[in-house]
Length: 121
Image 1 (cartoon, rainbow, N blue to C red):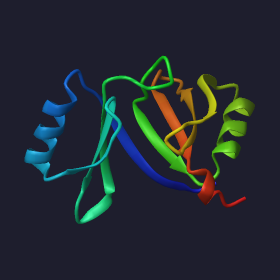
Image 2: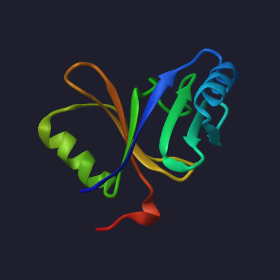
Image 3: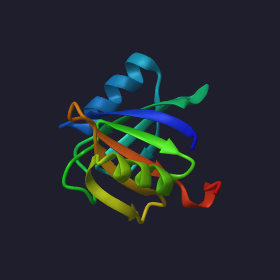
């Protein structure tokens, strides 16, 4: 399994104000906006991203970080084998990702996701 990208997700009570702040301060531009999450990226290095979230559209909790992998099903299998706490089940989301949330030993919520069309196995 390969990690494709890691994107911190900061909680925000005011997505527009937060997006404006990071855009002005760091020159980041919005590359995704679902209304409850906005992802900003460096225009010259689009793999450098930061997400701002006011919640989550389908999960009861918002993640602290999103980690895109090339095989989310394998990551889910590993998390189950480890006995890790899955806090959002493996789900095919309407916005085109397959994901699950797992809690780390120190309580961080990880959004492990993949794009089904790019699966390598």
